[in-house]
Amino acid sequence: MVPRYARPEMSALWEPEAKFRIWFEIEAHATQKLGEMGVVPASAGQALWDWWATEPKIDVEAIDAIEAVTKHDVIAFLTWVAEQVGDEARFMHQGMTSSDVLDTTLAVQLARATDILMADLDALCAAIKIRAEEHKYTPTIGRSHGIHAEPVTFGLKLAQAYAEFDRCRTRLTAAREEIATCAVSGAVGTFANIDPEVEAYVAEKLGLTPEPVSTQVIPRDRHAMYFSTLAVIAGSIERLAVEVRHLQRTEVLEAEEYFSPGQKGSSAMPHKRNPILTENLTGQARMIRAYALPALENVALWHERDISHSSVERFIGPDATITLDFALARLTGVVEKLLVYPARMQSNLDAMGGLVHSQRVLLALTQTGVSREDAYRLVQRNAMKVWESNGALSLLELLKGDDEVTAALSDAQLAEKFDLEYHFKHVDTVFARVFG
Image (cartoon, rainbow, N blue to C red; front, side):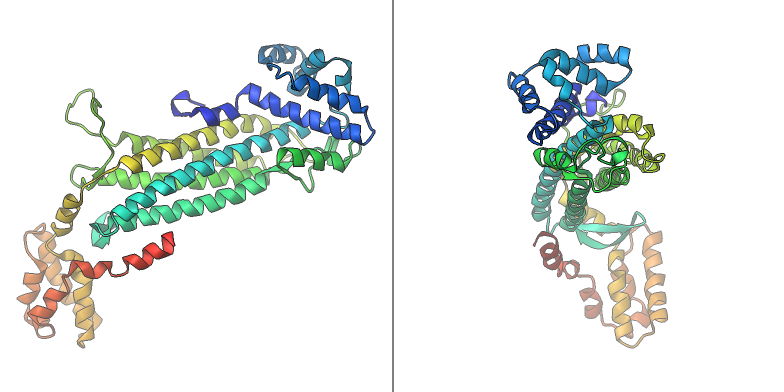
């Protein structure tokens, strides 16, 4: 985790003290249930919770010092708790194995992290919706292959982004449900030394679902799905970030990131206003996607368990969620403050002499009886003259001077095919589909 790209709430979920607190809750809930079942004295669970009620400080350094000797983090934690609680602590961890604690804790952390990420997506979608409504009918050029195609509106561009992030939220909701599972099933997952009722009790207390079959570990296909979902969200972040970066290029300049008073764009060139936020988002998206691959490789564990997944998850759990949280918040800020230049959009629309209306002329010619092949040829030969003049010539005027074209379409009919508003007649329909 890089502090530069981290926010406090998400980072706090992955601090050692936060992890140890979840460990304690798992152990205490399990001990309490075992007490209710008569497996251990009821006083054992009560002793744990009585100590917890004092709001003790988790001494991370002391636990780490014990682990330096034991070379086992869970044993080190249990030893430290026993030192604080006393004799009743010996009933902790009855019939459990380390993975019961570690895997269930990871599930809690990922579920809580997901709640933050879903709030982030809600905020992003809200920001996009506001700007989409603002520019619902702002004309701009649509591009395919980076080349002028036909007119769209800037609102439609943003509506597409909203729909995409709305799908991201749906996927993330499903990923949260899949990852939020609890395993308290003991060695190799047979429940030989602990009753399934204990697992169900711990799961209920922590807001999780019991894992149907845990082979001492929760199956890692769940985690692979989760981190793959984060990777897809990162891809959507980059898609919008790249759009902003392209629109901010000097020769385009239809929109740009907000440039605050006192901000500097270059150490050498005082005139520079660079799209640094969206470039940064592109880099963060690459990192988030990179975490999906080791999660996929974690699926194939040996037999009932090995720990090849463990070191991986110590990296990707915090890093992927913290980075995505930061990226979503940053993108929200970019959208909220995005500078939009409708006049430049119109200027770019007009820059190529009306080429953006070529399809309407093509279709109109076919409707008069001209074959599609001939219609394409007639429009293209005039369009290429405009292209080669870099927009200095007018497609409409060239068509009016083409005898083969005017034999099929009058000047008035041709002029009607160059109406910009024609392209926006279904904007309301699209917005209704996206925003309801």
